[in-house]
Length: 151
Image (cartoon, rainbow, N blue to C red; front, side, top):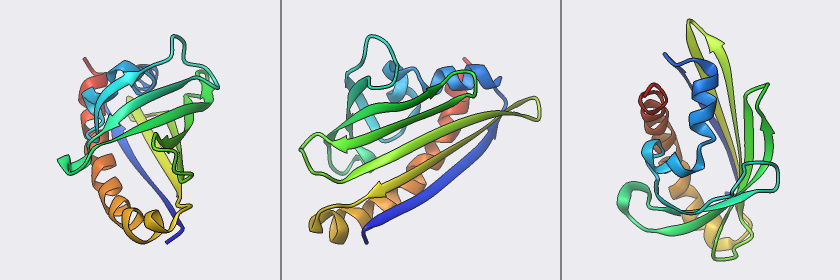
């Protein structure tokens, strides 16, 4: 497996701008993203080129540090995209894009992830494991995101 392409969406009872604000509050990622244990470093301002580092601990199995860099921040269009790499220097990476739209008195959120597995260990072992984990993690995170954003 060299690539993973997937997406998930949910309709949440939260105003679109509040939902987008919750998604882009880097310091609060562990409050709703089930795979992130803590934010280690964050930018002073979120803008293209800004980066942050988190400690991942999905399914409480193993830990690693992940570095993300903003590629897209469209506050009017409610779109947010970033590139994520493992802090160990592995060239494998993921592209994430979030989009929020008004829906049924709340908001519809869609997240897409495209993972590019560049090394044999990621292609044969880590990639297939993460593909399954990501579907579960993202679904759980979307549920928690709605609760977090409505506070």
